[in-house]
Length: 492
Image 1 (cartoon, one colour):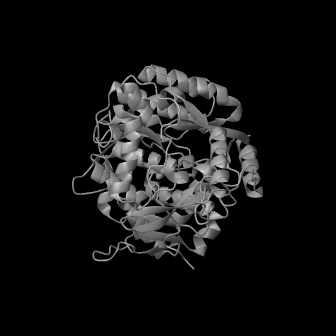
Image 2 (cartoon, rainbow, N blue to C red):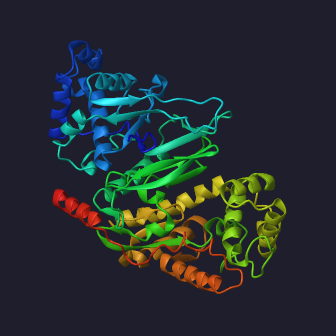
Image 3 (tube, one colour):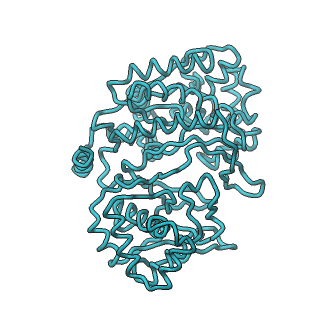
């Protein structure tokens, strides 16, 4: 049965000049009637076949990527003609609303089936969705003859990697906005492109995955809908995204599929089939705020050293405080911080959350004026500068690195190089060295907490540390090994 929620977004930057894709495009174009061919050609009848077939080739190329990821996948595509702005720097292939005409033609010829989208103005939002494209057996048969892996398709042709965003006052959705090119944006683009080029030469995968994608849920209002994140060698494209129409807000590196993996799953990531380690900064944002006040932040910042209130078990207090502080750093005031905490985590009362936050401030009084004062967006910019410094070190040494904002995954043999790069970066950006923790050390701490918790009188079998302690036995699936062998064979 077709599932409209088992879907992926249409990619406007999918492109291929491989002979098999060119021949497929030509074959399908010739199968159309004269009027349909004229619609696809449009008025650009003097540019040669490459441009004449551009929209058809983009649609077929992206549908092929989805089919190779999972034959049961459908593709979500907007039929709102206003969503396709030809002159935008974020539309590198300059596709127009003609892409929707192509889809209607492909449906008319029996290559795809379109499931219309809808908007429920009075409901809970569960039925809100864009249209879905489903492949018919006719197109699947043609795809089976192409013989390419999804990573052999360029899924980021001419895609902009320096993004400036703003948020409409009346909308929760951020929009990518235009900007003037400067020496700064050019230099940043060169840095991001250098990492993308380096990562394109290395194999990155999750060993236990039988099917090459991560399933997670996406919050849309009060509704959580399933979301599929493909895991393949075409999903390593990184970008830097800035917020509030300013170059000093955010600027973090986004995009790699590993950023969507749960922390416990990330330990199963391998680079070039080599075991990896992940190192992160200890409480980076509080540490950055401490450094701003000339305070050397050492030890576990979220350990309050005493049990504060009965509503929060002592064995979950530390992690609750951590979540609360990170939310408070991003909030404009306490009430909004507490609302955000309850929306994302547990439904504790304002009184309980206030007691925990006050206890944290008692241990770190220099942070009193920093919490609940909208600091997060600026701290993200600072940590993006640190990350950029580290990435540039690895790129210069031709060593692959997978950034996750305040942590980094590298081959285990490169852990010392990473530690040195992190030290140099923080000294260069904030003037002081900041403490770091490797994945192995963190796992040891959680195992100890779990053992103590299970032996305590407060133990509740409904709650444990399973979200953090996924099986640590290395699970290498046959499917992973097959994917890696295919990579080696086709890269050689």
